Image 1 (cartoon, rainbow, N blue to C red):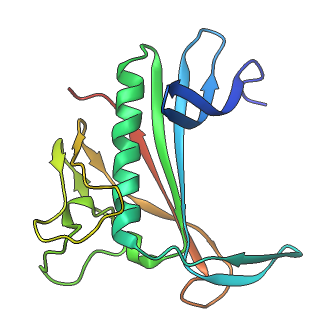
Image 2 (cartoon, rainbow, N blue to C red):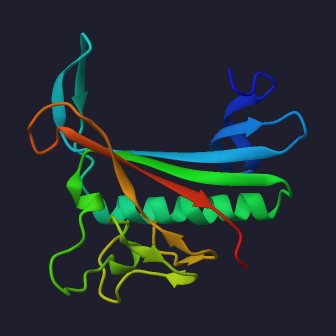
Length: 176
């Protein structure tokens, strides 16, 4: 074990209404807050003798918003806690997350794109003006740091469109 003295806590309350998925606390009270996203496309099959049946989350625009919101939340958490750092970790089997859009078309969620190679710059990010219901995700998100997003291969379970999994790890920092 690399850090046997570290404490790993799940669903840690960081404010009365917000929780961190994972917090790893070191012996010196430094900590790493980790937010997780698992974005799935429908897939089923056996893996190492265990049967899986993943649901289709669809609504990629809302899920991209959620990833961006987690980046902002981690920024806020570490800003309020000296000695803390953070990460947002996303695992997906839907290429719609890591594949850049075709052409120059602007979509309702253009400011929430998280595809491979995109750079998220500081500032507010919001929906296009004629966006329909966003299921309680109307608020703009103010990102404080700059993040160059790079997806990496995780595993390929089969040759189907949903059989390839990739991950995105965003080290969150304070730029403001």
